[in-house]
Length: 145
Image (cartoon, rainbow, N blue to C red):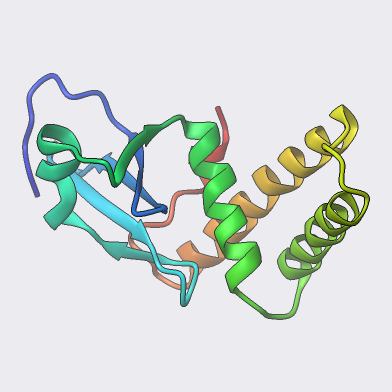
């Protein structure tokens, strides 16, 4: 874990199209977490901290909190399968997106708001499940901005 004075956390990134978050640790350090496309949970990504903060590169984009939630849930919804309320909501978003694709149009403002609201909700639900399962990188409060 790195220690960087004056660094405002959390910060959010897309690293090779994968959501990554940098958060403060209980001892004032920095921890990095990268989304696992296999589980939807968080993999330690401390090895990326210096690259994300100081080196950069074409494969790195700093993103907003809302973009982070959106991309995380987009990846989870596309890559994971399962049962329960979270997966039913993922299927709802997929159905809306499929209709938009079939009709070859942009989403309406109502559809955009609906998808955004569902993704914020599924983010919190999924993160709460991860917390109960003991995932140290889980944090449902990120969606509450």
